[in-house]
Length: 232
Image: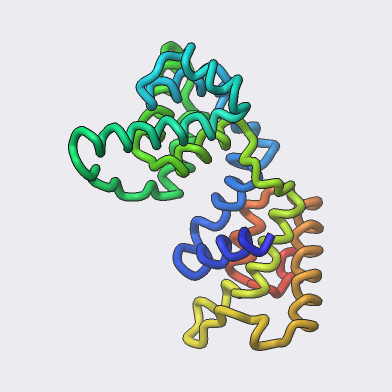
């Protein structure tokens, strides 16, 4: 929970506009439930994409999956093997720039909005491109996300709790002021901080019940910070 809260805090401090998408990423969704926005990507399509990205046949990937039980691990090992071979023949491989989170999330949305004749191939091409451009860890979590299991052990309520901690630690509305508050816990003390976290978490859950759109809720949190009454 604390690690996830720190990821959210980094987003608040550096690129707050990405926070709604980051939240949806962690709960393995693209949008509110009522929008029914799904990638429509099945296991076999992901498997074929992993095979292409790793330079192996689908049969080889299928066999590795049976052994590992996790296509994320399979693609990570495949990427690692590619790097080793590349280094052997051509010296140290040039390090690729890291994938930008928002580019990956937008690619997921692009996949979800792809339909019609040839859409399966288009989706596969988008996935393969991401897997090829990413490093082994990035590829692992791209695959796990597409399979709807990041394997972080965090349920949706845990992600909400982490968001509440992040908002309480680093109030977004204060980031817009000259006197930025990066660690509110240090400022107000642990006891008051814990009460604040509970209040913010309850406010997020209550708002989610009344208006099940976390994107809009987080947009308001970015404006009003811990002033939960303004979520109503």
